[in-house]
Image (cartoon, rainbow, N blue to C red; front, side, top):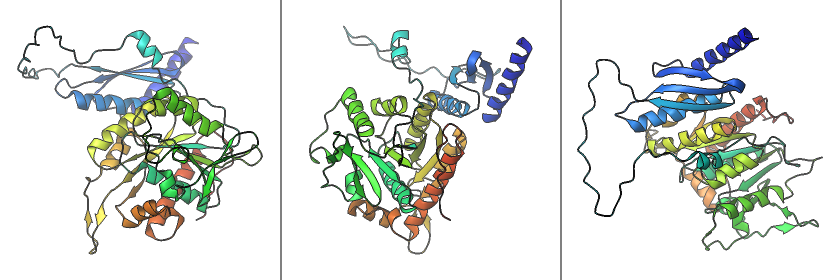
Length: 392
């Protein structure tokens, strides 16, 4: 028995090293009972930010390896033999009388860490919903809601029963993008919310239930309660006629709302949205690590604002170039699509007519991404509802 466990562990270690491409900075892999993995990574004491990025990427990639149930990466601070020690920075000025300096790198207590553990996502499906796709960015202003709304429109145009839950409590934009800003959801005989229908999409948003100009001054528990109510106390579908796909447009970041969805909602998979610029990509890597820790599969990355094409056909990479591809490769994820800066997409969102519900180049771009998403959803082994079939 001991030899068999050793052999299984060795096979798993090989798959882990293959997922990381066995880099020089991987010092060791430790595998514990049940598939829990500890990675020992070579950190760079002169570039702590790069080391932390390396740690997050390694955890995300290893979490996708079959047989791995948990990943923890540890950074060392050793320098190669013969290298000169880094130059010592000038000492900081002494604190003012009566003040204390806060140490960087302080660690939470064990009790605090245990309270903040993400845990595993539930596996039981919500009655009336076959699949749930989370669209996330971990960074605001990257076009996440535009992607969520247009993906929903693309799926609906293909004849799928599609829902959209606008979980961006502090900045609900689905009512504007769907042209349903004046809608007021009704309730059925059981007091459950009936989603608003537009462009073939069944949608719910806090924007339907609040003054559009009123600030949402809500804290974590209220936010989680609102999301849970719109998800569970709504008539998305029935057990005999379920919704094929519910898309959840999450708020930016990796805070209470995102963790509530990852922990309490039976999410089928997640899709990450980013722009090519590094300031957005670093947040995307954190988002990928959050989903890895909550055992939510990430289908891939969609890059928005990839370029602007002038009338002569020349591409101008205003937000940087190749960032989405590099991040996808680093995380071991596919780049599912690149969306250029197109006036039609912006105009459609402002006018309440999603570009994907029409025709032309913008619609084709979103339909291509939706097709890739459908194929990846159907390939997941964790869920087995009827396949999503896209017309060619």
